[in-house]
Image 1 (tube, rainbow, N blue to C red):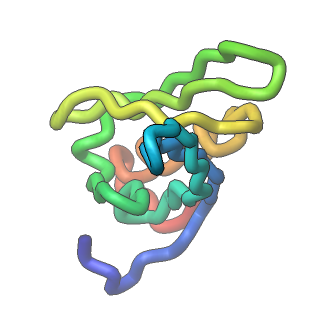
Image 2: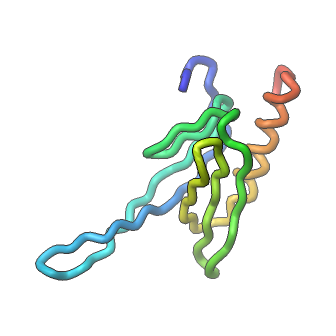
Length: 107
């Protein structure tokens, strides 16, 4: 993604859980990462999407402490486990999409 003229607009933390087997014992390793919304798109630890590639964002709670944030993209759907409600992040994304669509000068 072109970092020129890129402004960070919002961040949200997500968890990635991996299963590791050591000495015939399965352990869970939890890592925390960040999804970053910029004026150019969305970046995660492993993936980068331009705004044009992200079609929508949705969220589903699956417990009182955890939920899934879904990025619906032209490359498929990507899910991220989050601890907080991403409503502000999602609203900012929709605002940026509208801003890019209309070609206005400021957010």
